Length: 170
Image (cartoon, rainbow, N blue to C red; front, side, top):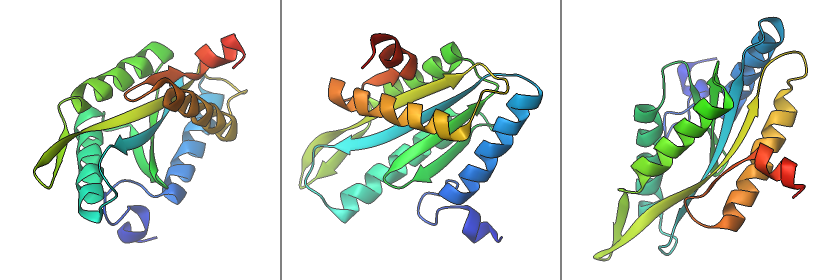
């Protein structure tokens, strides 16, 4: 597999396929050496009319935020219209801190279209696993996706931890 097949050509983030391989690798590691991991699923929103130039600008800002706001061992990926970030050896509170830091840094990001300034906003779904043999990539991805849907329901720049909605039975 060439470097061009491993990285999204627009963002430089890992592709869905490569992310899946790395995610399964980390799941295997947590089975053998129980250590926590966190998955963030991030959706971008902007309140401007759909425009390829604006979308490209927003995508690059999110990408820059991921590259500058994560550790080298973290795994950011393009996942359709969303982004996934795998945080190996990170517990739930560490994942929450990363998510909050991303939200905080994004609050200063704006897009300009036709002389108007628009905020760039995101929602984040967080799923954490404490490690061990019960961890599966599929279950963690489903949990992060469900948490993201709840974050979207709560409004812009919201982050939801799957544990919150599992506890409430949402």
